[in-house]
Image (tube, rainbow, N blue to C red; front, top):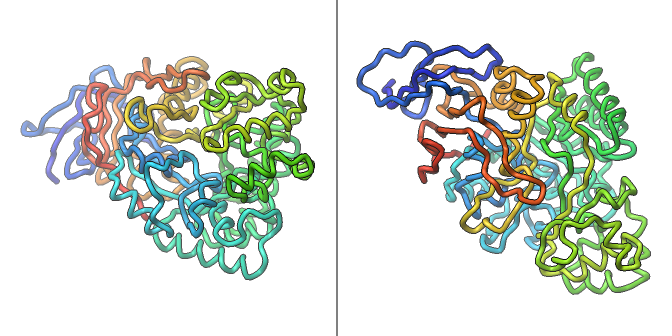
Length: 518
């Protein structure tokens, strides 16, 4: 194999969890051409003295499905050493599509700047390939879009013929390159899906990731349901952002269920995002039948007291905890006076019940619904510490890739610029409950193994040359809750499929990511 570059003098963490060793890493023809003592005088060299050399980081839980089409540079990810993203999570994603307007209800980062001209998984992956993303991308099949394409936004289980249609769409999507199947059962798009309906679909996939049905009261019961589905479907199960929003004791119950299932022989693990809060659209407070309305119809529903009465009993991701002081409206153009305010205080100032305030805010932002976002304060550092220390847990962004300039400069998604940096700073440099070798394993080999990527996630001869070179003492996040769009620090060089994408901390402009089809 031709050697195009040798990275010398770094401490190599190969992604398996093995201790770091001082070694050289050779790259040739887009693959790792050797790890150890590389004796060649002909190839260019990169001095990594004082730095860690690791496989490119794998984001097992990304929502970059659309933002990689709008701006494929993936600047927020590359600056954290991320070289592969897994999209299509939480039942959100870009296919299959039959009604483009309805499909927007299950897409994060949607933008009119890029028309959704595709309909199937294969067509979406073709569009992504044409965009030439800077990172590798693999996708799951999102259950939210399966239901929107067949059942629509209705509050009922799928009829037998609709289940057959979803099954056919799922099998088609897997055949066209998707790596698995995901659900977001807490969201209105999927809340009416039954356990049996989900298990029948999960049975078709090699990998199943689920945002469980309840993440406040009843969270442990929802994790138990996920485990039953995984067992019934005989599928690798990944419980997405396992830690619930109602305290550490419920967290421990959820983790114990996963441990028990693992001991019983189930192939189950979990991931967790790195924020102390959840993030979603304000319109998540609405039931599915209201979300299905066009803008004029939704405006009529929101103005009608009787229709508000129909909507009020809906148990949503926002209302489930019952404490509206935890829900904070983020910066937006429609209601700037309420930005960074919690819903309880907004409602009190307006002399309303919280849900009526929510309905009024939505009514005043019908042209900006996709940009009206809230955070839900939910987690403690103790919960995070216990979750990330657990050997079955890997971190994920639960965010979209962004860039501080270009078409996404005004967009935000907490975690986009910070998740991997936060994980390293918190787990390795501050709390010190993970060694550098184990933290690299959680960011590389472990998620690659969970998805079944055959040649990524480790530094070994013949593997794809996704490589991150970083300062282990200085790698960390700089973003904050209200200033989330700040690049991480400490990553020096990033190679994607052997191509230098970041050199000396600066983007090269190269975009060598690949669309990974199973």
